[in-house]
Image (tube, rainbow, N blue to C red; front, side, top):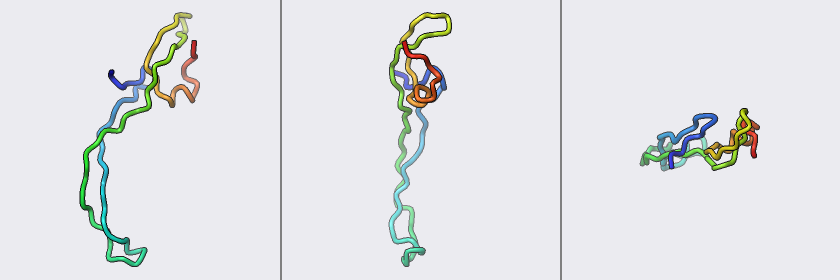
Amino acid sequence: MARICAITGKRPMKGGRIIRKGLTKKSGGIGTSLVKNTRRKFRPNVQRVRVKLPSGQVKRMWVSAKAIKAGLVEKA
């Protein structure tokens, strides 16, 4: 399954999880240092819903939760 929203075009993005060690200078420490940078994917919250198209046709498509909340799709 391709995790791509049919309405907004949201798709998985690459990123990273940065791990730091140490106490910040603000908190009275010597400062933080970067220890590890793990590569990861940020996946959109895509759900399969029955959508009513402007032509009146009903079709199942993958739509992001953000598009559903915003009212960009009319559920059938």
